[in-house]
Length: 266
Length: 326
Image (cartoon, rainbow over the protein chains, first blue to last red):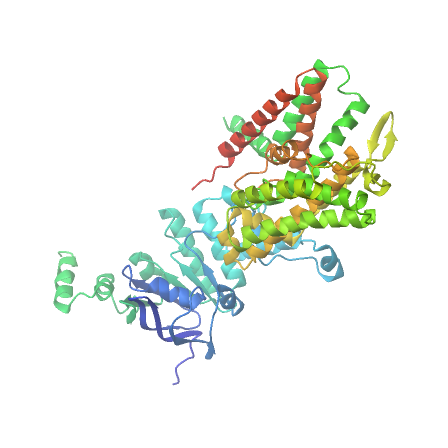
């Protein structure tokens, strides 16, 4: 049985900042229809890895393959053109513009044909209709597409950002701590939304430091330490304390100690 | 309880609508001056108000676009003054074809817009500092180029927008409908086109706009160039109205009035929200105040005092309502 080809694959990524080695030969694979979570302590290199995958920075060494083909992203625009959309933790939305305008931000639909070419007229109705359909499909409830994003709750705003990524991503979506700024209930909504995005067939890479969420959402969990991928685990094969132990580099005996402490008295 | 809540929400939404505040201010000001002065509401006087509004209004169009990108242009008045001197000196003293002279004057203003834009968008300097610099450069060039001379006896082409047609018993110059047409064009560009949408996005959240693939530098640059164009047109209207090329024009009143009109019109200094219709109303409010205060015999210095108060008031309202929720 031949192994399926990854959608996105990275081999031996290296990124140095002067003396600091942020990525030290990191590997990565994302397969069709899966959610891969990246975890790691602060400074383990997960943000750097994500930035290399989304074109926000160029690695000093190593290679990226998209559907098996060698690619090089010089900017987030390159990655976007290749079908990779990113959701940022600091809510990259324009607050005074309405929901439909934010979904189509930078990709505004003009009237088709010569009329649109000459007048540069925005087709607001079409954008609103498409946004409405898209939100219905993703089961995101909002009152009106004309609502400025600043009137939405934090969870709804991040919902807009996730929906935008899902609308435009041809190959995969990257979500960088999408729930870091949210409350408990809103986090729930966004996690459910990410599940639905995956169910529609879009693979997702997610960074999070919230272990329960990672274990709930991810099919595979990539653990980073000191700029390297040290392990790939699944929620079925490993427990949270084990994953944390690998992440922090605890020794086996320390781990066993921690596990016995963790075990509830029966 | 729910009805009062709903009523509160409706009121809040109405008061929150961008042009309601300025419109309210305009109605109050007009009511006040019509009580205080018998001539204020006469057609002839109102048309005079519009003629005075014309120049500041057109300046304020460019200013609106710039403030929407969270910038500001302190140089608009002196850039207009320079354009005005270029037009009149070329046409009067150097025998250039008047239409070409107008075009060159407008081009000079566009050049200043380009200069501002390159430093703001390209070098990423604060608009406040860049335009404070160009304010002084344009001021100096105006006086150098004109030798402090005033140009009069202008060829008729330069006076076109000062020509008069009559509605009822009110004389209206061509410049006034021209101003309304320009506001219409600006409204169209801002609310109906991709470019306008990007102007809002850049002012609203520059980083988000960039991340979504909007060429933010190009948008910024184009806004400053567009503003330069409106200053050039304002210069043309000013020449037609005053029938002079005056090196001392546009230095203080028009400069501050243009910014005041924008802010009075409800455009936020934080960028990303505002309307050109609001700016038009804001410009008329200023015109009404200046005209009304003159009619009721208030000394000219107090007009400065009042516009100073108006701009601070408008900025305070902006800060209190639009301060970014973190």
